[in-house]
Image 1 (tube, one colour):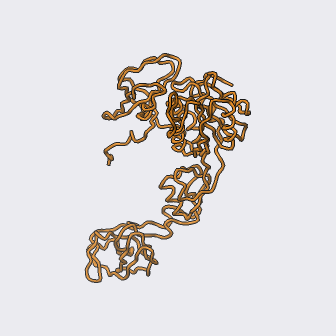
Image 2 (image 1 turned 45 degrees about the horizontal axis):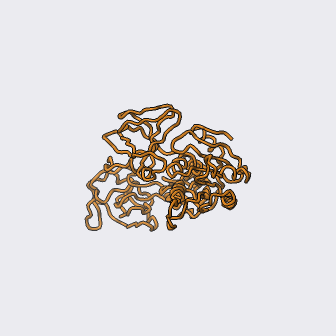
Image 3 (image 1 turned 135 degrees about the horizontal axis):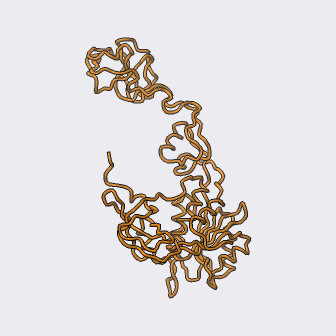
Length: 413
């Protein structure tokens, strides 16, 4: 087992061990944010025929330059109706948005560019051929790959699925993640917080992070501080894709996670990543087909930060995603930061816009036990391992945890 890896090397090792999960069939209506496991080939043409893009009047090709002349309205075509009879020169059809254009119609003039007179209509502008007509197959032709394999299914992609008549679709499975904590001091939120007892907040934070990564959290519970209790809980979780435990991974007398995993046959690949918060991280796997295992630190911020850097990318890759890491921005520091050399620090920061710049300011106390500072954090500022000082006004890379920080009050239109 390797020890004391840098963060990038640890991420590389983890992602090399991750395989994308097999596909499953899902109702398209429930497939938002899932990843396509198939190419969707259309059996339909969209639109199936030439349709009007406007409410107005369909014109024969001979009448495109008939500005100022009166044309006879011979028919009306509504959306959902047949295309009507062929147009003759001097005739026009009242037509509505989405309605099929009559045969021999060369363009549609907008309603607001006409004047209705008795049984006729005066066109007040010149119209070009094809204007305000959506051609048959303009969007999708029969045989087109409407969506490619690996596409994340957002609102527009789900609309495409519906348009081509797909009510079910093959998507990559969601990872099933067993979450467990260990420690005699831990209780559930409704437990008795007597002397020496604390609530197992990691169970809630890590479950929320798991869901946010598109995976399914399954809470296994709190294991007592004995090897036997921990082994029982781990054995019960071996049918999941991933096991995430928190606490018990360091080198204390009652840190049993590593020896118990070893006894169960888990291949322990590395322990310890040179970051702060979150050094005592263990990663392993049960063979080629068993679950991946992440033993996270017990301190709440350390658990969340290590999940963010190492578990989240693995879950995204399992689920078929290709973009595995948070967006990053360059931010100007609003204050001086210092640390010792040797470990990369991930500093919890709040972000705000200042003109064209983004300014990053520490959330305050960076202790790994101060969960409220993590709740305030909109980003994690990357303080390089060998650097010892970042001056106020310097720029640094920040991983953006909350995309809302990049939203603005101005649409830019």
